[in-house]
Amino acid sequence: MKKIKLIFLILFMCVAMVGCSKEKEVNQIDLGQLSDELLTKEEFEDKLNQIDDSMVKKLYNIDDYVEARVYIGSGATAEELALFEFRNEKDAKEGLELVLVRIANQKDDFSSYLPQEVSKLDHAMVKQWGKYVFVCVSNHNFSEEIILQYLQKE
Amino acid sequence: MQQRVRRYRKKKKAGRVLFGFVLVGGLLAGMIHNTFQSTNAFTDEEEEIENKDKTEDIVEIGYDYKNPVPLSICVDEGYFDDAVFIGDSRTEGMILYTGLSNAIAYTNKGLTVESVFTKPVINLGGEKLSVMDSLRKTDFKKVYIMLGINETGWPYNEIFIEKYGEIIDEIKAINPEAVIYVQEILPVTNSLSQSHSYVKNEKINEFNALIREMAAEKQIYYIDVKNAVVDEFGNLPEEAAIDGIHLQKTYCEKWLDYLKTHVVSEGQEDE
Image (tube, rainbow over all chains, first blue to last red; front, side, top):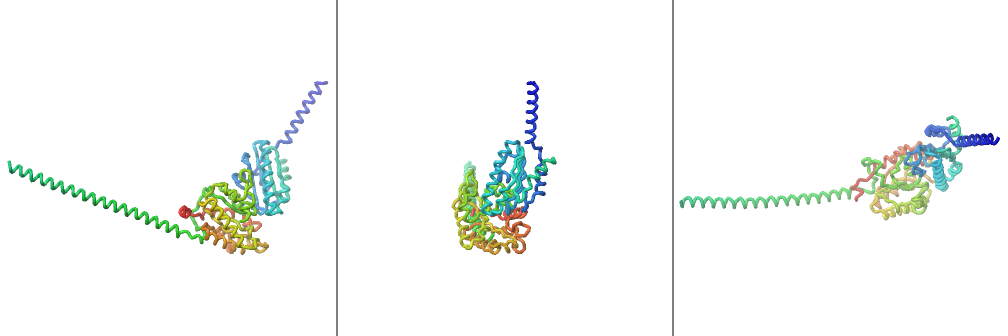
């Protein structure tokens, strides 16, 4: 009886572990494709343009990412879209901290310049999915939904 | 025998005379040659000095600070390796959109000729400093400034230009060798100029006239950069900015291209 209990316990633990890891696991994401989807489906007032890697590093103070797609507005708004892929979850977590610093700095800058933009920053979508970090600053912010739909498709 | 001795003496005498002639001739030739040589050297030196004077004259009268920097050869982006850009959100956008990451950008949204000295907006080694304090801790050889759009609501133009002048004086004090370019304020779109309560192209033109005068007075370089982006009426084209002020990427590229083709030459810099 004890042996059966032990076998069940081991099986349960295995299932639980697999379940946990699946929850955190995110398939490889094509950042180009996802950013196109976000730029098309999300509602931006400004025209966002992609910036060079050299500027991404300066803007976010992040330099150990694998890939980044960052699109910024003209300065007329605080709108921004940024998708980062890191080597692993740990790096992504550190990246997330720096992203939050960037958002806080933007709030500081816009509060005295264009205060109406601060609410966009307050409600910005800033999420980490496994080794990925996504940022979207916009008015309506459907981005999380769009990303989830994209992940389900993949 | 006596005849032979006489002939020998005559020959010897002729030989001595000939040797004497050759010697004197040689000496004379040498002297003449030396004289010519030294005369030539003198002429070259004189020419060099004269040419140098002429060059200095050209440089001296060649750059008229009252006029904008003329069209020059197109420099590559390496020219901005030792440059600092000081400006507001428009300059910030230009640097970001053109990817000019080799230049130092001391920019901030809403930056004014006053807050350059007072507002701690530049993150330098984890410390937030004002633009001017940051500049004091920076190695640079060129400075590009565009400020003024955020000051268009100021009632007194004199205060604006006085503060702007203080910036120039301070930069000169920090680095007397620095090449300082002031860029005229880019206009806004006609629709914004008509509808905004204080951001008006007329006011921008007034400021630009004052900046140009100041540049002449302080002997720094004025760049009439609005030529890079304006329409036939001198306004920013409507498609250039969604809010009438902040430039879209293509217009930021035109702006940078203009800067690349309006630089002062080494000779002018040395002056």
